[in-house]
Image (cartoon, rainbow, N blue to C red):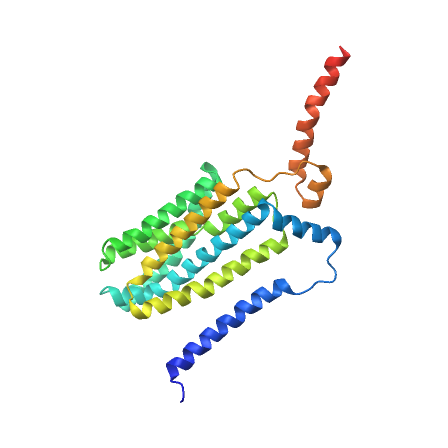
Length: 272
């Protein structure tokens, strides 16, 4: 029995998605003969300490973040023309406004960074994104609420990726190339999987868009709170050898000076 065009199309996308997911994980499983003993110890350290929690939770965070951003930019036009009485030209303007607010949000982030810690900045932006998505759901047919919700959502999601990397580096002490690769893989998978889920839901109900965006943002909020709860203290390096190996020179010098000061004081008191 021959497959219909729709079935062939679904088979193509499912197959492509499975292939790229397999390819992404295969890149991490390929053997590397040049890995030294020191590098092997470093990988083991990453997988057995709080470092793993930081990297894993951050990778999951950017998965949902990039997925939500890609979904909103891809489906807001169809949502506007399907759910409300908005015309195609106005829907184009709404899509452009979303991207414009992403740029404005990065300017807002410059001011936020001067008055907030990265953790407070992230929590504030996540809560405002939840508010923006919820605003659009108060009255789904309202054009004005959709504009307000979309622009708020775009403005305060703009800096979340960069802030997540800053928080991860602050807590981990440093981020290696391997870990950046994990973040990029997570974000790429999010951009592929979440829009696919959105398209599937959109076929059943066009009203599902902002429900999905709200769900994604709530998952981001939970992951970030877990990161703060599970790793309450920043990882620090207390020896010169460990610090030099991890590239945290300034922190090592501060620790060395702090540990040397009491010893110097005690020797001075003995001399007197």
